[in-house]
Length: 340
Image (cartoon, rainbow, N blue to C red; front, side):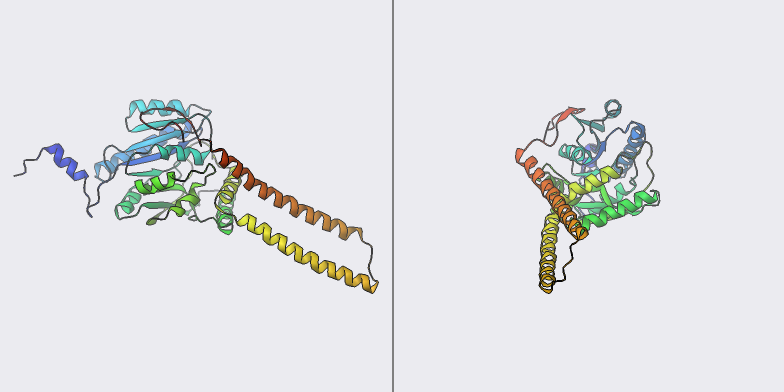
């Protein structure tokens, strides 16, 4: 006869799994910027996922959902606060000003205290049913699990084309990342701790995660349409994100400049020998067009090169200041860092 208290037996059940690995507590981190239209649906969906996983003994009861308000101009923060009052599982983090998706996500991740965490956008375009599969992959020994889109039929032709061009461009520039993976992923406590050790201010999380290493796997899903509201990543922001990723994680553009300069010098040398040869033959012809083309070409190359070099110098300047990446203005729970 088992004389152990029921509560103790229940706690033991949560402390083991089929392969002997401890059942984890989970935090779902959701960056939000002007997501008042999608917020209610997002809370309902993610909370139902959490409840189902707890009921099936896949995660521990202390699992939470952390919403990070990235300086929204609408009433997103008011909705987060209200939800946290109604549901103790909902936690809120408010940044002092808009810092962009990557830093907002990093702010939320810095407050995680659970065994594992999953980041997802509030628009619910990422399939939430994959959360269960991600947890299962973690229980199998993976410390990083990437959510990878294998179907973007819900996107417009322009969106699909620019997204594919984005990943190809990043690969060509030497940035190591998982194709068609945005910021929907699971991180173990050790992987998250390693990520937070990166102290640079210019961050591109999608490219930083593969640098960590550790055992990883992927789950595949079809991308859905936004549940509500408008996309927060138009072409302008996608280009800015690409530039941030390239200049933060790769020196390929600088090497391209060096190669371009070397090629230009070779062309100039050949052109000089040809001009000297023609001069000695006495068959040179005065030409305004060729001179102007040469000036514009070399001037354009020089300005482009200076712009790329200036981008790197600017990032070095920002890094040397060692300013905090963000400030947390308010939280719906206590005992967390206020800045990082």
